[in-house]
Length: 238
Image (tube, rainbow, N blue to C red):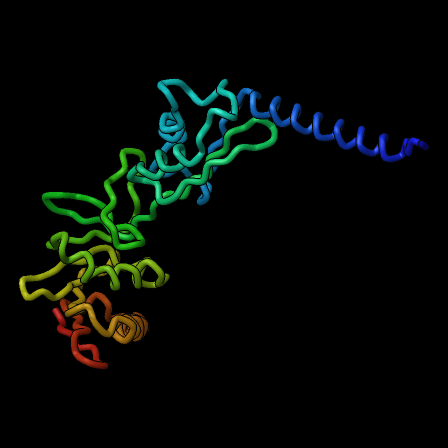
């Protein structure tokens, strides 16, 4: 019987490849983690520090550094990071170089509630605690309760996305009638926005009024500017 050495060589090569792959995979899993790299998706760690992230990356009362890859549960680490009040989303991963990576997306505040309880409202309309590390430059809100957040949120979202409004509106307050009043950064007249409706129309009217009054050099002469009436701006002079 003639022996087919080509088949034997191919089979031996296959066994060797499988052995080397298994050995390499086992060695890789046993490899110690020697570095943790934290990346913030907005390039700034404003509300949560890298130190705080590293503290959350702890397992069995020991740092994840110098642990073997195979003992890490990345899902658990991600869930641990997601519990932080300033983190919107966390992605934890391993690199082939033995590094543990954490990509952090921080929550974004769009307004700050001022009162007996102070807190931010984030871009998703949720309560967000104040940070000890950084104070966001966002409009203040007064005289609202927790149950009013959903009502005022569409206006806050509009202000955050509109360059003109974001630059000029510094304060939003709710009066006894349930209507909203806005204050501007550079001028002392108040803007009666009314109820949270027709947001696009009202803000466009405000921009048109501002542009016209600025050209006429009259912005300092007004006490009240009302947007609450349909398709018109009603002004009261000092």
